[in-house]
Length: 151
Image 1: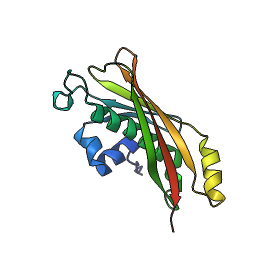
Image 2 (image 1 turned 120 degrees about the vertical axis):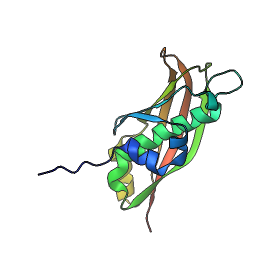
Image 3 (image 1 turned 180 degrees about the vertical axis):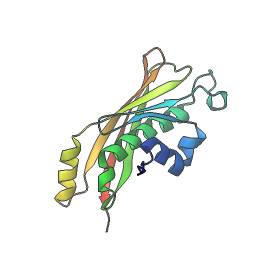
Image 4 (image 1 turned 90 degrees about the vertical axis):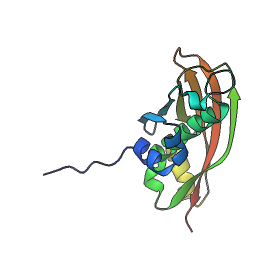
């Protein structure tokens, strides 16, 4: 008897989000508690000072937020579409070399699903820290997501 394995969230995102594949993002962890995504050091995506371009770091962090949203709410996809509503990013320190984004939900998933069950269109923040290899936080981002009910 053979087991059928489901593709990982990272594999699904790389297959469906061309920008994540273009940047060669590495999905190291994706579950309902947190998502960890790495942007390798790639000269083609450097800025004027030799570190990762701000746009690449934004995409990294947004991709980590999408991974945790899929992990936490993937079982709701038959009735709602996850959509990013707005995002804010702050660049704190110079980033050089590879950087990693770690995302965490800002509201309990059960609370968000209860709001969806009650007929609402819940919004919830995902907070992301972007770190260098030495562990220093180089950026922080918050993406507010919604679960838009299917019509």
